[in-house]
Image (cartoon, rainbow, N blue to C red; front, side, top):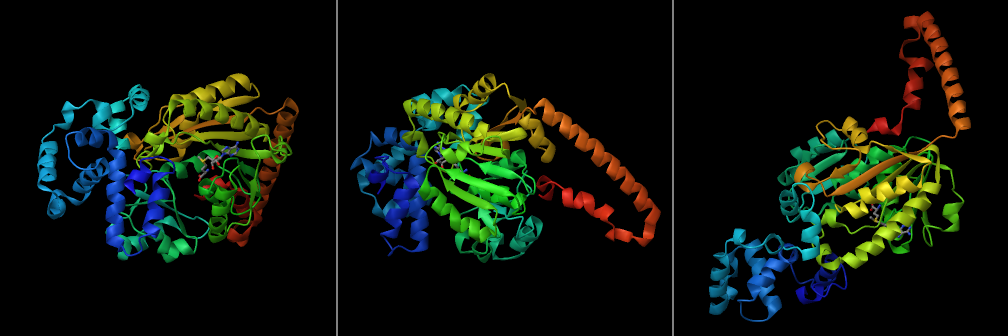
Length: 460
Ligand SMILES: C[S@@+](CC[C@H](N)C(=O)[O-])C[C@H]1O[C@@H](n2cnc3c(N)ncnc32)[C@H](O)[C@@H]1O
C-alpha cells in the first residue's frame, strides 16, 4: 500500500481508505496504527529515504520500518526485525537531526523549502507544518450551543479527547487524538461537523446576514457553505457553486443533516458558466475559496508536498485569478467579496489580491485582519490581509482578502436617504416607547426591532 501511495496517482487518504476497506480483518487498533505509520512516512519521506540508503531489504519496507519505529516505538517492532535491520535502526537513531540540511530534516522538496524559507519565521512555520494537527469540530449554531456541547463533552466519555474551546472561533471545539466522530449521535443529527478552526474563522469575514443572496463560488463538499447557511439562519439564498459534481454530491447529505433549506447547489461548467453570468451584480456576499496548492494543510495532507509541483502552481494561479474575476461580477454594489486559500505561498495569496485590485478599480480593499481581530479576542494579525499559520495561531495555514464593490453614486445617495428615514423612525419610536413605559414591558415592538434586524454575524 505504501508503494502505491508513493506513486502519487491519488491522494494518500483515498488510497489508504481503499486499502483499509479491502482489509476488514484488521481491528480498529491495527487500522489506526497503520494509518499513523503511513502518515509519519509521508511527513518524513525525504529524511527516511536518506536514512534508507544505508539500510537493507526492499525500499518500501525500510520506509515502513522507520514509520512504525517512530509511531509504535522500537520495542514493538523488535520481534519482526532481521538482525541487519536492527543494526541499521541503531545506526539511524544516532544521527543528529541538527546535522541535516533543513529540507532533509523537515522533509521538503527543494522548491518548497525555498518558497517557505522566504517567509517570516520560516523555521518555526516549517516545523509546525510537519506536526500532526489536532481535530477541530464546529458546533452548528442552528442546532446547538457551543458551550453546552463543550460542557457535555467534558463531563462525558468524550472527555478522554481533552475537549477545549477553540482559541478564536466562537463555534469551535478542539480535540486531541483521533475519535471516530462520524459515529457520534451529535454528528449524525447535524449538531457538529469537522472543520479546522481557520476555516471556521473565514465565515466571520464573509459575515452573511439573514435574507441576503450569498454565493459560495467554490463550495466543494460544502465545508464553508454549512456555516454560512447557519449564520444566515437558513434564510435568503445561498448558492453553492462548484465544477465538481462529485464534491457537491458529497455536500448534499451534509446540508440535509445540518437542517439548512436555503442552499442551492449548482454544478457549473466553469467560472464563466451562463448561470454565473445571470447573477451579475446580484449577490451581497461572494466567497471564493479558491482551488489552491493546499500547502497550508500539510499537517493533515502531508502527501501534498510531494504531489504539488511549481509548474502546476503556475497553472493554479491563472485559474485562481480567472475565478476571482468572474466571481467579482456577481457582487452587488456595496457587496463583499472574500478571496481565500489554504495556502501560505504569496503567489496564490497577496499577489493574487494585488493583481485583482489593480485590475478592478470598482472594488476597494477592506482590512481583513482588522475585521477578524475585532471579532476574536487575542487574535494577532498583521493586516491588511489575513494569514493564519499553524506556528502562530494553531490553525492550518489560511489566507483571506476582503474587497467591497464601490457603491454607485446613485446607490450611495439612496442608502443615505434610507438611513435618514430609519434614524427618524427610530427616534419617533424612542419617544413612543418612553411614553408607554413599564406598561409595555419587554414586549414592545421597540425591543424587537434591533433583534429582528440583527446581523447573522452577531449570532455566533
Ligand atoms: C479549496 S476547494 C473548496 C473547499 C470548500 N469550500 C470547503 O470548504 O470544503 C476548491 C474548490 O474549487 C473547485 N473549483 C475548481 N475550479 C473551479 C471553477 N472554475 N469554478 C468553481 N469552482 C472550481 C474545486 O472543485 C474545489 O472543490
